[in-house]
Length: 172
Length: 172
DNA sequence: CCATTTAGTTAGCCTATCTAGTTACTAGTT
DNA sequence: AACTAGTAACTAGATAGGCTAACTAAATGG
Image (cartoon, rainbow over all chains, first blue to last red; front, top):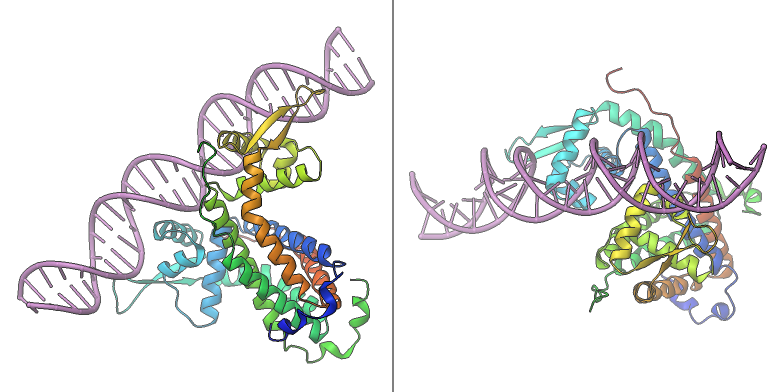
């Protein structure tokens, strides 16, 4: 967003509402299609959304060469460590993950994905990732830049929104 | 995406990977920030995400002057009609919604939001909606157009993705 | 006017979460 | 060496929100 501020004073935003509705509608569709897709994908793998997300996190970390601990997973997924224990039990039983005792600290455990899990996630996600890239590459570089800035600006907005303290109950 | 196809043959996509990573990262952040924001917002209203989504659907429909029936709500939220009955019980008890018997068809019910619910949603969402528009308007019209096309293209992709039939279990 | 369809609810079950408390270990301090 | 505090993960038990199947009541239409 380096050069965005300059645009604020430009004549754009006088009667520039032509695409505002289209963009807002795109956001709605994106959110919804994304949620539905994740649900279908989890169903197809015989697991719930949280478990699938956990699997993706573990696999991503493993590809990056980073060890993952249950505690981090809990934080990443916004669930308690107790729930994470159960989640790991499920994914261990289904053959997707396994626990590796930490060599030095014997309280600690690292979590790793099985070959089976790597293969399954790859089979299911790689074509979609490819198509995502294809879509991005259909846009001109300046357009890609704008899209990236937009997505990050929205993420920033969401990060600081939704924090209103609870209002009174109807019975107040 | 009317004029996108023409761009496919342009020189863009030879070594145009400069922003691809930024966009992919933006998508990740957007998804995540959105989910977290919705969770915080639901918590702040003392309800779960489904209930909040239901409330938003009812309010949006009401603003558009459209009546909402439990059956439609069930479809919109991808839950069963039985679960919808429970959801309506919860939101009726909390004073957000109420059931109105359909005058003609006595099997049927329409769902309406209370003034309290309208106020609460407005208080919590209107400033974010305004900020979303502000962000959109910081982009030039052609950029807005590209952003809209991108969002819709991604939504289309998600709509047709994640449908792989279940793979074999690890024990096959 | 009877058979079918439709809207919504009820009953009972299942699963993923939570909180609270436990176990095992590490680390820091005297 | 012996406390003390802190941390990682797990266990137990409760709860919430979803599901399917069965039910009630009303509308439809052949």
